[in-house]
Length: 101
Image (cartoon, rainbow, N blue to C red):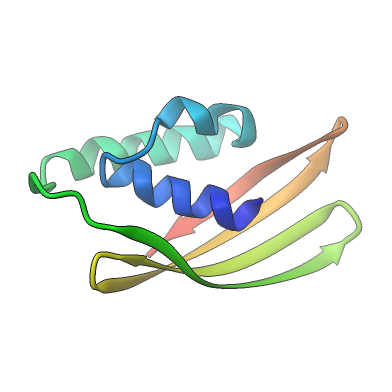
């Protein structure tokens, strides 16, 4: 799930994805940071929308209610990295950290 959310975050940044679909899965801090980055990226986007796909995923669980993932995402012909932390809180998994490179 975390790797799919990371891919969708790249889709949002490249005007493919719906930002609102991420809302239930991200903490307010991660939502604000992603929304700000999306706002900044809008000025640099071209009219063509690159193909975005998951290349690889690595995950670990440093604690029973925590999952950390590192993913490589292809955006067009360039690869990008993402790191995310998911935490289980009140019966639900939420992304509490997301770094997109």
